[in-house]
Amino acid sequence: MSKSGTSDIAHRLEQLTELSLQLGTRHDTTVLLEKILRTARTMANADGGTLYRTSADRRSLAFSISLNDTLKMYQGGVAGAAIEMPDIPLFDAAGSANMTAVAACAFHTRRSVNIGDVYRDDVFNFLGMRRFDETFGYRSRSILTVPMQDHEGEVIGVLQLINARDAATGAPCAFSHTDQRLIEALASQGAIALTNQQLIARLEDLFEGFVKLINIGIDEKSPHTGRHCEAVPELTMMLADAAHRAGTGPLADFRMSDADRRQLWIAGLLHDCGKITTPVHVVEKATKLQTIFDRIHLVDTRLEVVRREAEIRSLKEKLRHAAEPARHAAIDRALAAELAGIDDDRAFLRQANIGSEGMSGDDQRRVGEIAARRRFIGPDGNERPLLDEEEIANLCVRAGTLNPQEREIINNHISVTIRMLESLPWPAHLRRVPEYAGGHHERMDGQGYPRGLRGDQMPLQARMMAIADIFEALTAPDRPYKKGKMLSESLRILGGFRERNHIDPDLFDIFIREKVYLEYARRFMDPAQIDEVDERQIPGYVP
Image (cartoon, rainbow, N blue to C red; front, side):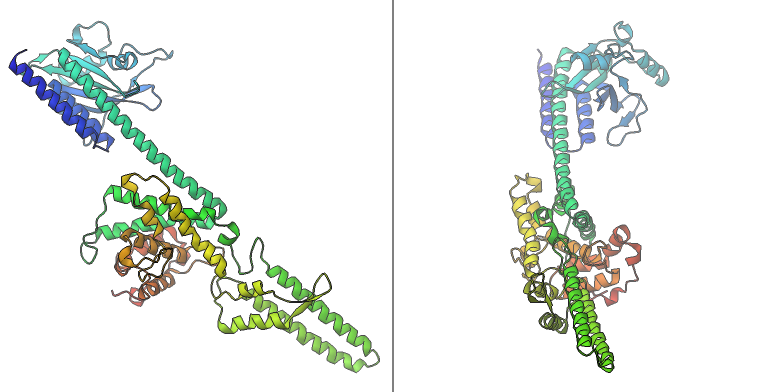
């Protein structure tokens, strides 16, 4: 072999090596396919080329990208024109393998087809190619068709080159055996890279499906929490995008790549995965006395017993004074007053049982007084206080429905979330998912949970999720213990969190200034909740 021939092979091997290195770093399938075809054309000095992908049902070959220098044709790929050529069927109407089309033959035989002049070939049907030549005034001569087989021998596509050109004269010529062997090596490497990419994509789809599976499980336990698990990542990404766009201010340098966005999205989807272990009766506790049922009905029953006892005492009193009808009216008045007092206590306790009602100190004291003053006769004939200590404690919960023990159970979900996420072997591009998801209940002042981290110890992404978590909870219309708040009230409450140094002030400023709240409201809130917002009235915000 001459020095020039040796140098040419060395150069082409260098191109093949360079492509091999690039194949491992490309993550966009379209870009990868175009790179494979362009490198193949350069290595074989071909005028044109086409890359076919095997269809999902493996019944046809679909054009993915087609190039031709002479015709200045560029279809498909990253930025080419729309592909107008029909797919190549791999089987005929009877189900037999299509062996007349050269690309289909290469697919079925798993062997390359190298033809010096298609017009002199009598094996394959090149009628379509002849029509192409007539239409565009072109002359197809040599053709090299190579199946793209992955590491398991599966054909995932076909690479086809048209019209090799003599390196010295540029005249059309046949593809050499060396051309064929090099393109076969390239096609094999390309197929393996594509297969690996598809495998990674399938694994990522499987993982995201697993995430959704967890959220379905949470949703089955509590549809309210399930909606929360869907809305919080959406709002988190809205805030992250707004921060990414910031050109001035403390977050002017914050930027997110596509990989950063995916990592934050996954963290948002999983931020409450620990709730799958939280008891349903705690998650769904709609009233203060609710366990597996609302015990306010037991209190109603006891008060009904108290009423009956009062009526029986009144009747007995009348019997003792049967000879004094004049006293009956006084007895009836006393009974009416006592029953009115019982009904008033019943109405008060029912109101106190509603989780959305805040309990003042006076109200809490009244619960204790009613418990001490009202007594009833139980089924065993013994007198008992109207409320036991546990019921008193629940009714005296200052806000919401959860007592301290239940609040601790709810709060424990984040510790479970962290343990669950930290137990997974995260790949490098998702390694911060536990940190992001596990920090959304921390506070800037270090008084959050479970780790008591300060703002400077928390990643910005966790601080984004904290704002999204709070705002979604304020506006959610489907909580069992409260109605969704109006938009303006929710922003005032969120501003209170900002003033008490619970949430990140810079992110809060972007949340308001860039109207992230309004974008979220229009997409996820009940229109009846969206009222007029005067941003000047939002605590902690300077327009």
